[in-house]
Image (cartoon, rainbow, N blue to C red; front, side, top):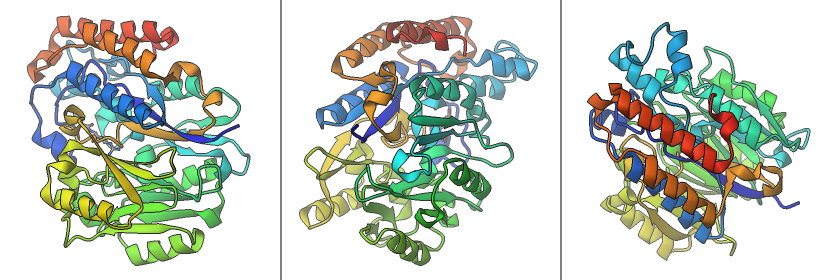
Length: 418
Ligand code: SUG
């Protein structure tokens, strides 16, 4: 059995729009009311997956949720037609595309029972995301039905949990026991801290992790206040490398010391604020890159094009690659439609370290399957959505039909009524 990292990308759903629903997410707030391009957005996501496959990586998918979420509207005693505008927008969001927020994943080598544990994220801080978890859980239970996995329900209210976006795993190799780092927030200036420390602590227990190889670390208030609503906007880890902004953590000295004790082989690559400001790091999504190990053993950073377009960021990267740093290769992808809602390459994927043979094959993709998915997107995804259109019954019908066509193509029709 071979344990590898599988990236499960959320397919960008046909209702992708800019409603400005996430307070504290500067990109989403800035683009509120803009015109979205769901078809182009989804095709950008497919192109990113193709680029990862071309690098020799294993690729999976998670599927768009049913939108509008009629069941959720019903629980609020309303309907899509009658709902208040903000409620209607919350029911229509395609936010499940950001699969890094789907769940927290602890691979089998880290857990006491030797299973790979997943806890679906409750996402309760933002109303439009709080109703994602039941369908996410249904998908996780299908994709990871094999006894090699243990899939847990959400941590209860009022403990906000945003999944893998606030979780990092460092290890000497993917199949060796790793150190898991859970990053929580306490304060964020004017913005909410979305990850509650008690939620992180509960997941540590559910996942049967070894306390000696588990760290709970506070995100810095200044990072959240500057727009880093998740830790994966200011830090990313892969293998024995932690790539982080200097101002990501509340007490970086203690965290780095604890990490070095837990994993002496760790290499910390810290980007100083003097070279790249927190503002540039956040607007460019430098750290919301996928840091991956290629089949050659080298590490590559899969970056959004905004990182290349930000001079301070691009020159830091060029210097790093020219020197002796662990990141040997830069790959630029265009995920602009997602970026405009505050979701970069790393937000769009959930990492699961597991044997691909144990995942449901319907959730794994190669180029041929991506061709079939792209054909459905080309044929059925709306080309544009202007904010005022989200109440239009014709648009709703088009969005619902598009998702059903995709589920039929992928043989996952049991998810239609989720
Ligand atoms: O939760 N944006 C998402 C972006 C999530 C990014 N994920 C990670 N960093 N892992 C969020 O803020 C905006 C949707 C809108 O406003 O219409 C939104 O939900």
